[in-house]
Image 1 (cartoon, rainbow, N blue to C red):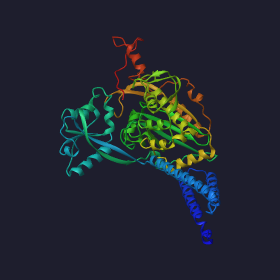
Image 2: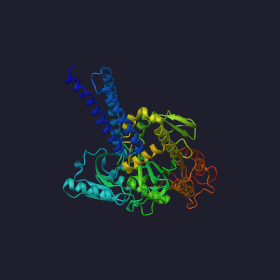
Image 3: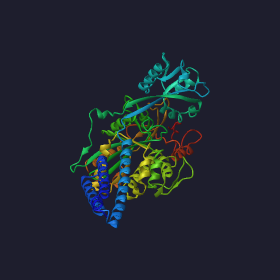
Image 4: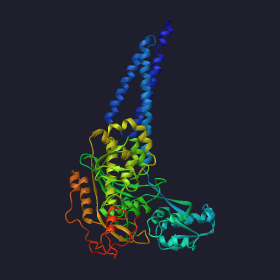
Length: 547
């Protein structure tokens, strides 16, 4: 070998080493951008990469040492591949979390409905129609849609106002108006109203006007930061909203799952408080008129947060919306979860599923059926709320286990369209960083408030329906449990499950009514005599609707 070639034989090794160093710097930059990795871990990873780069340089710095050079080159290729794959997944993680975080807008879909045999097949085709609208319910969004139609048609739009949903439906079906303009979330309300269960088959949607609004809970007018504990931890109060929407995550819809999570990152405790969907409480926008809690979602997730804040005397500034229909993908990506059932039962809403009392290992579809079921239980929706919290508990425990490393990519992919939150990326990253720094298991305690079944006319409905009048003793206990978690006190499941002395509602004298469709309702029906009295001599309950 010539002297010149010997002088230049370090160049290939230098190029290999420089490539390794550059990729290491990029990798470290990506790690830093996640804001999730504790400083000490960043230092350790940086030192390890520097040592590996030095070893590679020592192996490849002269090509004349063929065996060492080849070994160093192979080592460098392996390290480059690891850095490449690592960088890819780091960026994928950042993107997945960014996509579900910082959601600050919501869409109200105001739909144009005509009779099913109407020739119109688009919004434009209804130009010149007389539109039926609700006189007060969701009026601001309806007026916005009317203005949009005026602009689109270039002419005035004729409207006729109706006091409620049944009057609006009758106006369309009887030919008083040619079309109706209504929040699409109301359509599902008709399905369980007496005389209107098939209304959806008698009309067709020819288009929608999307009205986008900012999500801002009343408490955000004076922003409430997470409570900082003495040890530097944080306490978050988060509203978990469960929906079964087929549209966008940002579309307003009824919330069938209403859980408040109080999270103390210092004590590693999470308290889940479930509120039944039929809870009969004033909405923040109803001027004191009670409504089913589930209807709050029609008016926006901020109304849900404010309504629950009024009920529990707390400020809720964070929400986490879960699409339970898409949740199947997440659980399947996790490889299934373990849920604990209070009862041995067969599902009533979807046949073919059986769950044992105690632990059940379930896939996504089975978990969804478990979380939806209410007809098989005496307690109906109250037990469904407990089962939903059991599913959430199972997902959290599985997500914190080392097993997720084997399916990390599929888990990240499954998040799309399943979650949405106004918690910022930085706050999520801070929680993950603290978990990596401190480690440790989390304790998850669940509690459900209770009430008494009754027949009342909710704010959002035109007729009486089944509701649950709150038992304020259970509401007060929920307040107490939340306060303990916020203050760093340990709350056990035994404490949450302990019975409350004298837990009956004293604010309403309404006779107890069983939730329609449940085992309790069937029992109540079977014990009603032909003369309209029950076997215990009391008058039978009024016919109710459940929605």
